[in-house]
Image (tube, rainbow, N blue to C red; front, top):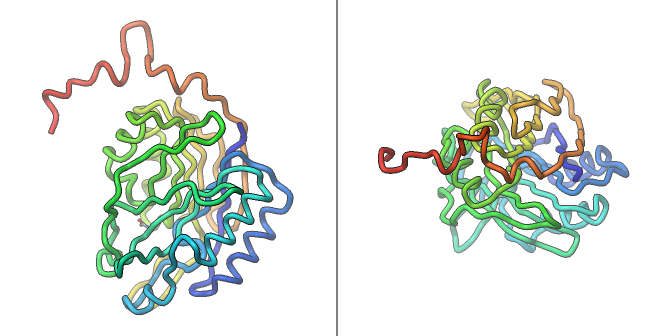
Length: 260
Ligand code: ACM
């Protein structure tokens, strides 16, 4: 099973240019699962809701078409973030697509900072998608801060978490070690690089996209500043056995009557 990420440096508002840059990076690489960053085609630092609206799409838009074409090249599943408009609401979403078309759509549950001004929080349940024999859960960027997200995906049977991101805080890459360990899942965090100074905001994105193993090993770590692609081979056998020794099982040992 080959999984990986593309780390990009999107140009704000220039969808075609951002698509072209990804086409160049992907080259002839094949992957069962490939994760692209959050909002990879639009950029992140919006200055008004009108601007977000003008970059929004539905599941039949140019970003969906681009991702389906990309999946034809990689022969696998692609997960990538976009601005979704549905019934007059805007969401920070990620599409899950194969070469056959759209397999799913995830709306970010935990909005970060001014995303709360632009987007509605996700209103769809967390879900696991099946592709070949892999169970894939999806969360977007700041969702990592809420351990309930990864835990719920793991309880739903996820083997691997696809994690499109535009990280601006320095904690996630380290935190994913714990998220993966405590759930015995793999994670592919696809981050972006570069900075975006727009309106009052000036974000520096942290790069270091990461593939984290169920045992806490970091299988891939991208550079801080450059676009990058990496793919690694993983096996699923160990992630489905949630025991950690003869006595401890990470799901069965939970004391849920004592938790909120
Ligand atoms: C973030 O959730 N993009 C920081």
